[in-house]
Length: 116
Length: 378
Ligand SMILES: [Zn+2]
Image (tube, rainbow over all chains, first blue to last red; front, side):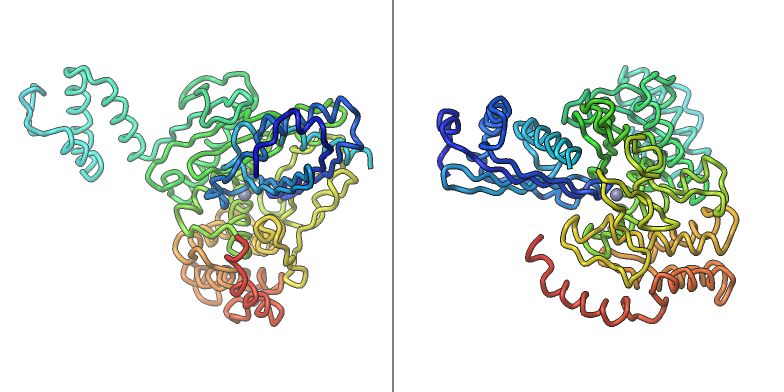
């Protein structure tokens, strides 16, 4: 998939599905977010984190440590400009650039649970 | 090195002295240690000296704990903040990781005569303050890693405390290291749930021993104190009553089964390794309570020997039941009280030791399906 620049992200809406599973507790958490349903500031911040992570540029991850006991597994799907990409990561393979995006999504998932 | 008064004139090369340290008699070891110390001083090789001192300590079965601070970042191990023998730092997470790994080392050393994680005196490495809002603890194959919970949320919304707060979590993580060096149970489906269960078993025993609790006095909770008062939860798992540890709108309900009839055939979490571990957890609890007294003395000994000598990477619940039953017979005699307790403990959760039924008809179908489709989605 071609690199998606910040300008392009700004112009288009996007949709995210995020799930974190595994971990010591085994309690999974997930959230679905659509840019059209977010407050303008929130959508901006999320776009910034997606661009920062290089989500659409990242090609492969080293998931060799898939059986590292008690680590988290992350499943992130983003639909954008008619294209869809899913990445599966774990604590052993997450690049540092992805951490801010994952932290944001985890916090959003916690906050959404609180509302329901 | 008889009467070798001047080390420079000694003809024993360092590697030979090292070998004596590993294999020699106590007297030989002491002499070799002295030789290396003097030789090291003369050559000014401080680093060599420190490394050899560490080797001597490890060979003699001495604890060597190191606690690192990730300072909310993700690089491991981070900055060394407390080493063996250092005074408490005042940082609760650092000091809990230090004390908890010490108590775990002591259980393995004093009760099971095990020399650290690898039985070869491996250093106990822990990293605390891993990431921000990291509500987890894990074993990365070499060390323990602990997050601070959801400390990045406003206080009234926090669900988790720091993960070092429960000593059984520390024992749990370190036991993943022991399992890796022994049965090396594959972290998926039933072998994975057994891997999890052994960690819960020995994690709980660490806590019971520190508290001097007998089987009937123990709470059998895993992760007690990890949840804040904002949620309705006693802990993360209950070995005594799987499925009852928490029930809360934010967390949902504890999904652990305590019987094979309720085995969860999920693909999530590596085939529910943190869910189905409730079944062997409950079996261990049953055995420990039936035997009475301190759980680490008999039930713990049977489980430990099974982990080290009987199981392999692909062992399932039935294999664990069969092996613990066999080990109880080896240790205490066939048809002994202990062996009967093991039989009853597994039978109560729906697994008959020696029957080779792998959890009944439903279990057999499941195993065939798993063997056909596993690997394809791993
Ligand atoms: Zn675990």
